[in-house]
Structures are given as structure tokens and as C-alpha cells.
Image (cartoon, rainbow, N blue to C red; front, top):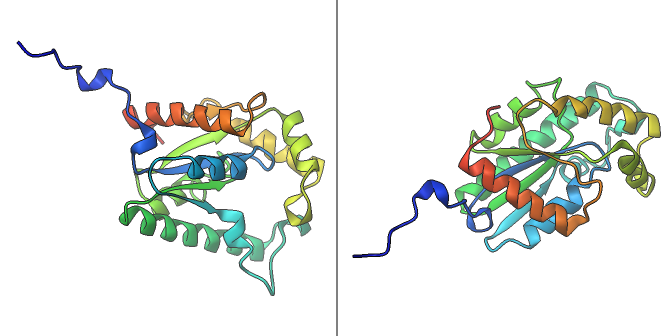
Length: 201
């Protein structure tokens, strides 16, 4: 008699060795970029970090700075950056390379937000929300410099809109008390659950 096998459902998927496309959502100062970089650096399989902000800032002359107010130019620049990131993600995935993208996607704009990312990357994209408390986000934003630093009022407004993700069915990580490595470990746990039972979005 052989050793009884464990039913597949009883074994949690291992996100560390799987080719994945992850979208890390959160407000400015949530730690998205730091967590995404760390997570990509510490996986067993090749993984790319695709930063929407970095791609947006490829535009030099004529750069539409969102700090100076949201307008048609900044909207067009974000749209183009998202499409460019989506194209890069599909390219990486087609070559067996995982990717993690980070973006401040709002729950009240589903067409340009999650719907856009799903169109750009594909239906296998796994969205996860990183949402620490407002005090933490304000503290982290204060440490930023250049055009990535926003006013306290803008940070509070964005954070308030992000609270709309509660009740959406997407996994949410409150990393207020977690450092970057701890948050990356929680992200792996969340992704293992998402692979086993994909969120409806």
C-alpha cells in the first residue's frame, strides 16, 4: 500500500515559485514601491518591478506634474504610462517572468482603474490593496522629496477615497505596524489565497 496522497485543495499554492502578475494598489506613502521592489528582489523566480511613477517620469520636456493640479495633460500621461506598463507586463509574462506593478487605483473609477489594468495586463492579474492608517501615510509622505511629495490635504483626500476598497472583495493589507520584509511576507500569504480562490473583480 502506498502513502496516501494529500488532496490538491489541502495544499496551499506556493506564490514564491509561480509566475504571477500582481497589482499593488494604495495611496501615496503606503509603501507600494518599497514593498514591490523588495518582493521582486526576494522571489525564487525571475520577477520584474514595474513602477507606474517611473514610467510616467520618462517624459522629460512637457512633464505634467500632478502636484500642479490634475488636468487633461496629466490624465493623458497617466493613461499612456498605464498602457506602457501593461504592455511591459504582458511581455514579461510571455517570457516566463513575473511582475509586480504599483499604482494608486481608486475604487470609484473602475473603468480607468482596475478595468484598465485588467485590459492592459490580462484576467490573471492579482490585485492587492496596501492601506496603512492615515497617520502613517502622512508621516511617510513628509519624508518624500520632489514631485512625489504631496500636500497633507491631498494625501488625506486620496487616503479617504482608498477606503472605498473595504467591502470590495479585494484583499487589503494594513501595513501600519509592519516593516517592508514583513509586509512582503504577508503579501505572499495573501497571494497564495488569491491563487487558490481568485477574488471577483
